[in-house]
Length: 279
Image (cartoon, rainbow, N blue to C red):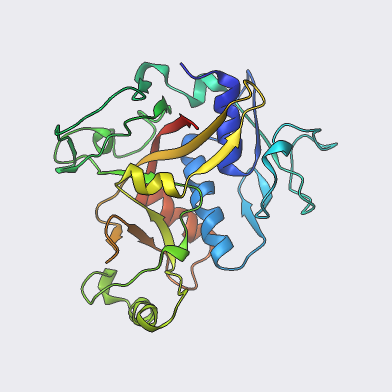
């Protein structure tokens, strides 16, 4: 079992917020977490310095040293980020956020030749990691089928905090929704433009790829260093397969409003596990 303080530090490292526990209602839910993590990197790749998020205010996108995760809090414990490196404080109720019934310790698991599927697609289990389950059952209007193991389930997707447009996207016609002209132009430019960034949110079905882009933090709770990754399910109708093997993109059209960007992420990615691994 992962210590609660370490879990909160992991959430802080991923979200860029200062996450603390409380016995009352949570400001941040599991879906908000994946929204923030994904949108932070997308907004950064678009050149923005801050992200406005409902109920949390303005979040700075500047990198903050991990030693500041639980340093002296700002005078106002909650509210918008000042833009001076101070983290927005977010309080969550662990009983509402985590679901210990579905925690799973993969740290000593070796699958070898064993094969697993989710949504009729290969599921590469996070061997070597410890999964802290998030409370997501009965949270969505379309039921819990997305989280199952049958054909109607969504495939598994891993998201490392540093997975952004620097991965690059090279697509061919027919792989984009409605052959969006702007996206096709961007894909074509990627063939000749070094450093071209694909517009959208990235994830991967391969835990080893995600590990290369994961966030690392040193816990003040136990002094150990951890890697942290989000384990999600991805809507198969919303993702795009990049020509780079093992990379999926959720495309965000140019000109989308902030509300539309959040909606795109919510329709495409649903988190269910916080993965931790000692370095």
